[in-house]
Length: 233
Length: 268
Ligand SMILES: Nc1nc2c(ncn2[C@@H]2O[C@H](COP(=O)(O)OP(=O)(O)OP(=O)(O)O)[C@@H](O)[C@H]2O)c(=O)[nH]1
Ligand SMILES: Nc1ncnc2c1ncn2[C@@H]1O[C@H](COP(=O)(O)OP(=O)(O)O)[C@@H](O)[C@H]1O
Ligand SMILES: [Mg+2]
Ligand SMILES: [Mg+2]
Image (cartoon, rainbow over all chains, first blue to last red):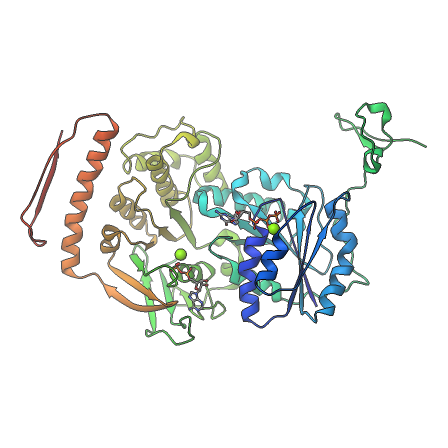
């Protein structure tokens, strides 16, 4: 089974681009399952179910949504297997800039909004730099020059990626993206590993501390001046 | 160097073959693409952008200089063939015109001296002068579009320019097309604007996802286009006078026939 992990910041156009891509995949008689993760609320699963695709929804609530996705990936795979799907597509929650949920043998697709400014590719970190395919959305409302600058910045961060100038409104780029989705990925839950480790700062805030004063905090902590320390037992 | 692009026939939405063998478009040519919404205009342009090889829903093939393009040309994002312009596009970068053009020319490995030329040509397309110290985000619609056209002509490398509905862009459309094609670009104009459509040497007519026919602009259409162009030029002047807060004085004389002349002259 192919596993495609689609990641991007909130509102980047993940669902919009996926809905167009799914149309092409359905025309090719592909059997697809989708898993959507969000933090508190989403109606994306309804949008996918409307076009007849079995969709599993997970809300991460108190857990970091990126950790939640990784932790539950094998459950999503089981869901797709039960549906006899050839392909599982995971749409992540809007990610923070520190995580990347791609595993070694999944197809990692980063959806990035071209209107977020020319410096965005430099800021977003591993979910861009470790992706196989980068889909740039919303190019329809900025100038050609800005699209070219944006594209160049993406290549600086991820020189080997394949770039698609996609459009969530018109479906531009969706046929090309569908072709990439169909390339076999050799995913195997048993041996699969993350391409990039999740952040390892474990601190008292992670377990519910609400006071802000520094001396209430323990764990792996980092100061404004960049000094990293471990405080505690 | 791209000398020509050829479109080899594929199929329409019903899977029926298109009724032509191939269309060759040469460097410097302006071609119109017309047809109702959903007829496949964008899909055609996408085929060219992706250098389709029977692997898109239309099953068309695209040749460059009479040959199947190399893999690198298809998948290297730096070698993108199509640059796009439309009236929905705006500048969002918060910097001066000069800083921005320098950034773009650096990104494309172009000589930074080009930026003077870009601004100079942009100013020939708009009534309101653009200065290099202006901030991009304060430019008017007309100024922005003019700058985009000149930037695509001189700084973007893409040999094909797609113009998608610039009818309300507030720029001298005729001159904009001439500028782009004059620098050897192949220009595809998706439009319902009669002036733009008739300006092209031929137009591709889309229907139900397929190319229905290719229509050479007739002599009569070209005459009509000349007249529309003159009216458009006068309209442009009126627009500028209104913008400047001037009183507009003009007379409009027309003898009722298309083949003779229209007299519509704005006096300043
Ligand atoms: N102009 C333009 N708008 C787009 C494009 N792609 C998506 N949008 C719009 O952007 C908004 C957000 O799109 P979604 O697909 O819901 O974004 P998402 O990444 O799935 O968002 P979350 O799942 O909430 O993180 C919608 O209003 C889309 O219509 C595009 O290419 N151009
Ligand atoms: N030859 C074709 N075969 C199958 N689908 C097609 C074909 N041409 C266009 N389509 C599909 O039809 C829809 C409308 O086409 P589009 O190019 O967006 O039309 P337009 O730009 O003229 O409004 C798109 O989803 C496109 O993928
Ligand atoms: Mg979504
Ligand atoms: Mg269209």
